[in-house]
Amino acid sequence: MSKILVIDDDEAIVELVKINLELMGHDVITAPDGIKGFALARQEVPDLIIIDVMMPEVDGYTVAQRIRQSSDISEVPILMLTALGMLQNKIQGFNSGVDDYLVKPFELDELKVRVKALLRRSFSTPESLKTPEIFTVGDFTLVPENLSVKLNGSDVKLTPIEFEIFNNLIQHHGQSVSSGNLLQEIWGYAKDDDVETIRVHIRHLRTKIEKASSGKQYIETIYGGGYKLIPEGITK
Image (cartoon, rainbow, N blue to C red; front, side, top):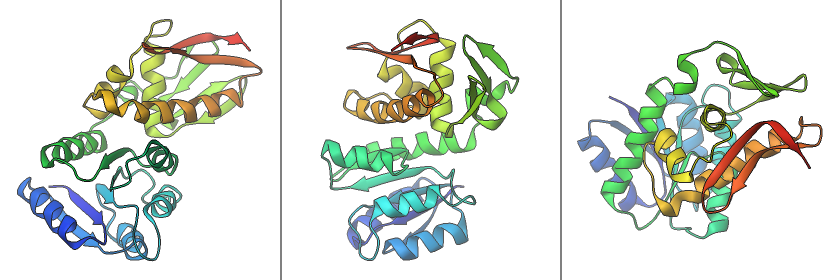
């Protein structure tokens, strides 16, 4: 049984989510605002956090950032559940550190799929960590145990999701990997309207790598096709 924390000030939504997740066999705890939610997250260390954006005291973006900055709960998966469905809202959510984003009103079946996918990632060992040996491809040396990449003598620390994306790309280096395939492999589902999920994480990954790249680019966008990793890099 998983412990799930729901942080939302909408009592009707909280009750709906709570009942349905409990029917799935989960233990659900709730908080009505960001301050209480963050405190409860640190106290209970849940397996998954579902969080709204527009709440009293502290908004969901800020709470997500605080969770990611807290070493004891920094790797707990976060699903943002909100009525804010514009592209810039989703980008802000992913930039705040959330793992997935679902817009209200939502279908309960889709909520259940997202929850199952995030919990599966939380409890299973990622493919990228099943073989913890250090290995080198092109300019990169991957260290799965530390979720890091060595490039030009620099250690580039990645988040678990960033490392899984990078590992997936490097396993298929020189080939195009679609956003749908990445969603399926890493999140456990593939939806055409969720390509922004991948796009934002790729942007963060590029930014970290390019800081240590000595003027090279390594991740190429294949328009209409996804992304391709070039281990030797391309000079800008």
